[in-house]
Image (cartoon, rainbow, N blue to C red; front, side, top):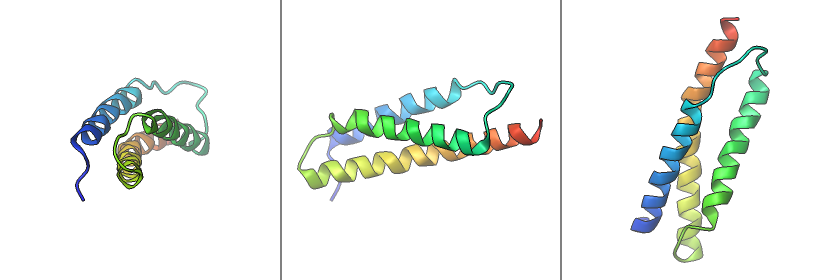
Length: 92
């Protein structure tokens, strides 16, 4: 079952916004721990899921699928960011 176009558009918008959020981050001194940064990123993902939860359309199954796909996409975007943060910590 393919996602509704409205939900695909919503996911695309959320991905773009989340990518902007990640790209705006500046690693500062003193740094937070890797575990703390993982928690922050997970909180951001949950914030986006909760925000877009009210905007997805369709039957409940369709909504659940769209939110699951959104979470998966945001987690994929988060991985390189967290890798970059780990490299930053190692460079200190």
